Length: 445
Image (tube, rainbow, N blue to C red):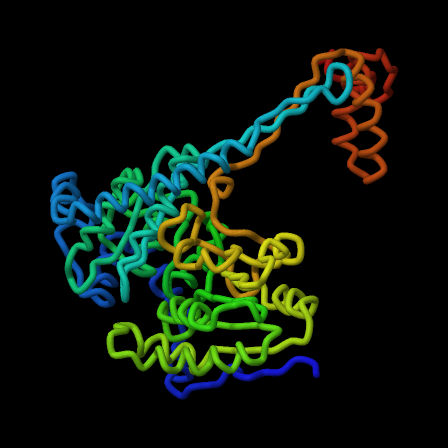
């Protein structure tokens, strides 16, 4: 039968209109304005985009304490429990990274150190939702890595301080917190202004303007990922539960109006019933995000039937999705069969929402098939793997000098070769004409 599409990506007029906005040009204007005018430009764009112009964008300790005091105790307890999970996994990741030194030949010592980045800027989105979980993922992970200074930025929500987000940022270990959103926030952190210290690295998700800002600023600073709209891919056989599949597809579709939600299955009946169930659930009056999720599902939802499990894994790898849920009889097969994904969620007891909010793995993940060449945000992203070398033996330095001389001249790098010659002369007593000539010249000075 081959591949069969029960539901394909469609095009909606409203989304076409939104895509006509020249995001790169707008972002470029903001960045260059902040580069030239610093805090004044930051304030101008905060007023323009967020209607927000407080006396100071930086929150004082009193502001932070007040935000925490305004959070329900249960919310604070939950933040702390989730951060325990994130910290435990991040510490395990850090433990897997080892500094080492090896003597590759007598007297030649080579080593590797994992050195934390000095200053990180973490962007915590607001906008449609207060994504306080991003504070755990970006700030706490950086602190576990050993980053000395983390600046956190998050936007106001409807002109107000998002108390729970600020509490999460503080408890995660942010050294400074600014109530500042959008591309003006990431540009201010990357460039530096009179009141916002320049960072070395930007982390955190955001809207199309934030993502484009990070893209344009990359190189001037490091970034975690080039990110697009969130994605979910479910791989399922006939053992999957229709209601669970439908519910989990919708759980990601609510992120925004451009979220791909895809089911690939070997069971045509599951595919048909999933479409029916998703459509029915999206009409439920108690789903507050139903209209957003429906827009995404109608435009970007897909249901694809394949004949065999081999085809299922192959197509799953082609999609290279951010989140891949595996609802098959033996879900751990995916650990061997899948190579392109941001994160795997194995079995019905697991869901993407756990990864997004509570389980402890990082939710800043590659999208738009970039999982073909990168993983997500983790402790290692905040560490620079640096090497060092030391030669302690006369013989080893002389031998390397001879080798360096030959290797460099094969590439026509004469000055490199002479650095090697010098050691061969000094430690192996090689007679080298250019050295003898130079020594005669310099002795007369």
